[in-house]
Image (cartoon, rainbow, N blue to C red; front, side):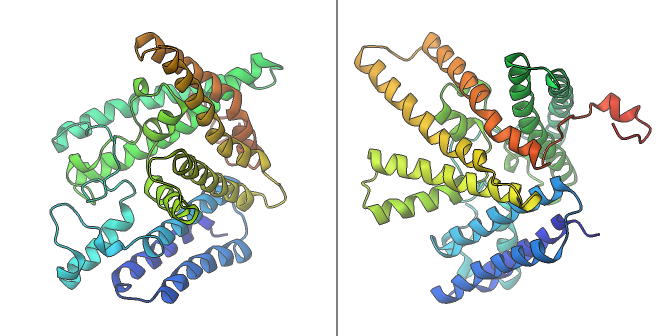
Length: 365
């Protein structure tokens, strides 16, 4: 049987064609772009049976966010105003360059090198291709070792009751998610930068995740620590709703409208992944987890505001307490999301370490 993820390039190719030939199209035509994306998703879910729960989950989340990107580009913004910093506007490009522009824009999730680059990204790992491959290789080796730690925590938590099991399970699940994303990104960038395919310039391959020490609030975790590949799409829809509500830029209503819109859309995207893997579940706690992030940010904003009124100043001790709060929050809240990831089969309940895989001889571990 054919894995559902093999149909993701079809959705990607459709978006590239929309970008290449969609200049000057009417609003109605752009609505049809969105509907065609929805049709692809529906046809795959209906006619292509599940071959792997993890494969279906990845198809569900990826296809949803690709459709969301289409909505951002064609309904909430003008994609033809976007361009690489050193490139001419779309209307002045040759036909070949227009095609390259469409492919590059679709592949650019963080706008690196474009006139809409996401803020607060960390600097590149190196400025030369050779230096990048070496540095990224070292980081990849570290991530593989940390993955083993996450696997050990999941093994330790397996069958352990109470908080003695929940604590390592939550930490193991969080680390697993972060490390798998980081490993995937590092492998791709080593290939792309090392061979000169897609990204030959290491300056275009900025680190996926933010700095650990920059994360001392839940807001900063999601705004700087976590990958920012969805930031523009989520922000565009939040700002659109701010306009609908008449929220003043910089005000509390605008702030929290954008926050809760972003986390609601994130929740729907991950919920859809759960649904694609197992349509019999309700997956309510996945939505609770993501919308709950907005609630946690509201609480910490209130505490920070009260602290400032009482004369508490930002400093090393305050930030350390903030990091303790962030870790505590995710240890508490992550199982809402992580348990349903395991229940729908998106992540292994009992993950395997590298040594275990190498010595298994193909046996089902």
